[in-house]
Image (tube, rainbow over all chains, first blue to last red; front, top):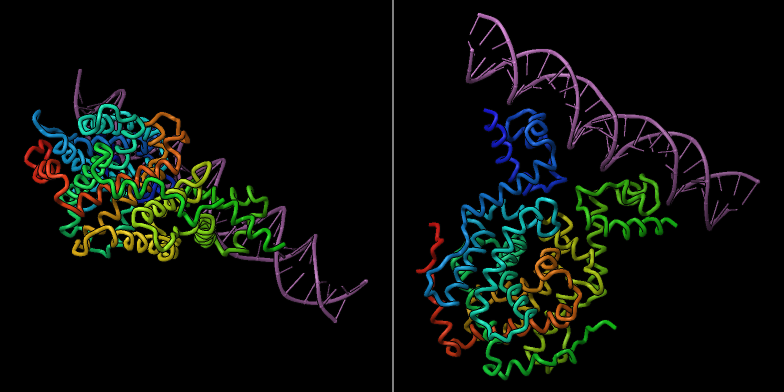
Length: 228
Length: 228
DNA sequence: ATCCGTTTCATACACTTGTTTGAATTGGCA
DNA sequence: TGCCAATTCAAACAAGTGTATGAAACGGAT
């Protein structure tokens, strides 16, 4: 029964921390939701901060288990790999059904990393990052500079994460119909993959779109809002 | 001298709220930093919440004034317009010199909108959104579906905002040399513009890159991690 | 110099915070 | 049954929270 309360607290604390943040959450609120005594948190976890760290770790673990890393058959093309990768990230960010509280928790950590973040970043972000780098290796020329690779990776991840990050904002802009078909995970993955593959192509074969690439090469001359 | 204290509080409150969030910030901390009495906040602003809202509005106003909306000459090409647009967003997000606290405040609002956000969103986000839509109008075929336009816009904005959002994370991944040359605002704008223009092209003229577009059209067959 | 509205200040108030304490309760084992 | 460690509980703790109060200080107009 001891493990029962411990687990109940851990499970209840996640959504609450995600919703209100660390400072905005009170131990009493958690205990009330878990239907346990206020002292339980200190007994089982030692304090609020430890509980928070363990909660994040727990959320991360569950998230990782529910949406395992992208995998593909050996003969998959890089484009297929990228699609699988993007789908995985989107699933992890947006969850199935409602936008998950776990990702909200992770977004908070992204905005202001705490001890909980540093503990988890190595095994949550790094692998994804390396996986993406691997995919890009096959899509980009061998002589592509390192920072270009990095920025392309950021461009891809940024597109995915934005939908979680600015979730409420996106809702306001497109006007409510969030879980509508064009914004399903599959469609979003399709869009981001297509957009990114074309974007990568813009770097990979420089000769392809001369009209546009000339236009945006030296455009800073027209910047009317260039401050000093 | 009354306006003096009011302004001093307003100016001091910004970075503190940005750093610690609303709940994590105490009135006493702000007053100590502004070197005024604790009662001043209630006298001049009526309460903590009102102060916060006014602080966000103030930060937004300053930000908008320092980095005005993108503008261009009438004969600018859409590509040039996009570059100017991206540069403006990046400047607003990343600030000049250090990553500004104002944008940190706005990111918090993005993650969990408060009254302060709703008050400001209409005049801060909307205009940018409309401006981007206008640019895309010229880059996309007239029959492009609305949700495709929207998602392309999100793809562009997402790339920009990510560098602010996941600032600390980006730092960890690229290993510290943040303000290095390849990550200057100009270079980032150049990259995102080029990437996005090529990405848009992938939608605009479907015939251009048949090898990739066939590959990523029906890739879900290989998704080993597809959890119903 | 005197007055009066505005602004500051020290102080106090009620309340919530995380944490502690020591007694009560539980549940398995001899 | 009786014991003991583990767990729960109500109550209390000190510290910190936002806010309110009423007296003091200020500063220009009479």
